[in-house]
Image (cartoon, rainbow over all chains, first blue to last red; front, side):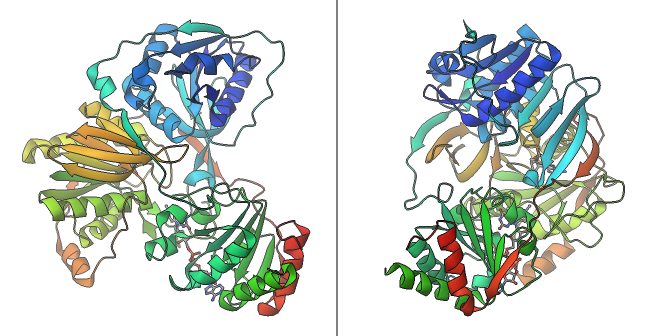
Length: 325
Length: 257
Ligand SMILES: Cc1cc2nc3c(=O)[nH]c(=O)nc-3n(C[C@H](O)[C@H](O)[C@H](O)COP(=O)(O)OP(=O)(O)OC[C@H]3O[C@@H](n4cnc5c(N)ncnc54)[C@H](O)[C@@H]3O)c2cc1C
Ligand SMILES: Nc1ncnc2c1ncn2[C@@H]1O[C@H](COP(=O)(O)O)[C@@H](O)[C@H]1O
């Protein structure tokens, strides 16, 4: 049996969980094993019903209100009990914040290895996989030797398969784990509203990025003006946040945000792999840099060679001129 | 408050990664070394808490002799003690790493009493296993939570926050001792001062020999992802390129006339 953890918001399964489930479906087809899922809290049953047509044989629903808010240890205790009872050959979750955290707890409780952020899995003997290092800037081919293989699946490494219409529905199987006070200790006690406003970097169609080349906190006004005429969000490199010019909430990269705009305008950014890994989902990259040989040139689609303090205001002025705004 | 921070020495790769001939490692001959930004924030947080409330701070790493540099970097901004679990520099998988760190924590606690707070990075910069801190916490029977970007510790409890997936924050409240996996953005780490660096240079580093275990995916080779390179079209040079840029922006639908 192959078990997949399905995260859901209200009764809607999360996209990254569906990616993991798509991979799990392929593994189930390759090995001839049944496919099971587990989901938690209120909405677990409704979310499981949305898995129709995805090849799921049984959906374990843990409709325990104490598990509705994120409770990593209790979720992991539950998965561990399902492992003990059902003996799956593979357990998968999304390589999301939650997925990686819960599966690490599962690995710790069961004393089994966990391969985080896999991009490919080939079942067999040996069991082969490819996983991300450096947030995806580097890949590792590895083998995994374990009675139950614990995996998380890297975001956007696997496409979500379309649900097959008329396919059988999963059998809904309520499951009541035995949970101790310790298992329930780590749980969200309250939620706070977002503290940012304006265009969100992760949703923006256009992002204007600034790096060390911007030179100072004040000079970001040039980038902000360009962003304003484009309806874009401003993002930055780590040099900029480390210098205190801009808050970390605007940092793009391995230890910041992943963006996926139609256009990323990278100004005074050299293109370190840890920055690029956060911007590689951009459809197009326009680099503005004094250095024709900066590493960003090997990932950019377009470039203007020059001083951003001259180029950026000139572009802003030209946009204002042609749009009459 | 007694705090332990765990950090990992990694190569500071810049614009591109070069691999060794056997494809088993990053060719680090021409690279500097650093720790993850997440861990830098963990170090800064430990220093700040001890500055504000008293107590003591210790930094620990499992790695080669040269990882003493990263321990000294942490001491240069105010960490008091450093522990090196010395290896020959080969890869240790996350179960082996966690096991060695647990042994070391038990030994340190037997001598000086328990730590109140164990700080880890959310994930190591290089291997990104997302699990060492959680394995340590589980072995020690202490609560753990990851993804933390704000910590308030007082009166034997911590209130810790992480970003919720749909926006906003999720708040956890836990009794000490506790294990936290933190992310960059937790704070803005200070730069070391020259006197700080000089002091760190003279400090003693406690060395221990970790016992090896096995348990993790077995690396066969490393490779670079394909299809990330593109050919760049240089649109122009200097401010005179502006009309051509706006032409392009119009063509791709970013500017409408
Ligand atoms: C584990 C780890 C994680 C990291 N995570 C991140 C991350 O999440 N995000 C991130 O951004 N970085 C991250 N980094 C840091 C990263 O390696 C680089 O140090 C950083 O991205 C460099 O920022 P930069 O491009 O602004 O600065 P630099 O590399 O200094 O580049 C500045 C560029 O500006 C150009 N320039 C200078 N003046 C001008 C001018 N007047 N006009 C036009 N161009 C000019 C220069 O030619 C140069 O190309 C991480 C590093 C590590 C080790
Ligand atoms: N070799 C190591 N020495 C000390 N701490 C480590 C080591 N490897 C991992 N850690 C800690 O565990 C965290 C998570 O690492 P990982 O599970 O490998 O992604 C890191 O951010 C460090 O805080």
